[in-house]
Length: 278
Image (cartoon, rainbow, N blue to C red; front, top):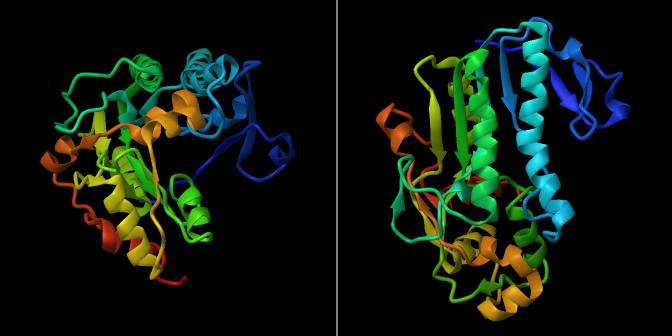
């Protein structure tokens, strides 16, 4: 099944490009032509959680770019009388607390800043039930994509021959290969049985120290892994230290029950595939 994709961008310079339409969440601007003939929306917008210090202003931007973006889309959908087959929204495994036990989609939510952002994000997505046949929220783990996102700072550190260990390095990291994540989104768009929240994680959580070792092996590099004590992590990163010191063992219970098969279920082969041409 093929798709014609239309894109929303906050970059005014892209307004003239084919299939690109301008929006500005903070001012409530949205080129309504982007909704002509649209039957599904995938909402991926969101300021980077780890990109900047969590000042009050940036915390607001993190939240508004997610739940505020969904609210703006819903406002326009209602105004134009658009009926959607599906509304698929990104979310994050940060919705869960920092614990070592396995967490499926029925697990209790956390109470920190990131958990509250995810809760508001999903609440805004679920408001689309009034105008969509289905709503799916994809609770995404750390995404393995070469040169992007989570892996980018590790790649830069490796250029210096180091991969720091945060705290005791025993905290569990839940992850997913970018190809598997894309397949989950395609399935969410096309499978009429998919509805509600889904954990997009392989279920093969690994310690942060173990992740470093697998990354070094995949790259064929020898690196130093100096420890950075928890107090130092907190001093350097402030409240964002929870992203580096927290532990989450997230399992994709609903995807497994519905027969989804991960192409890259194990960490080392997943990393080797990403860096095969490096």
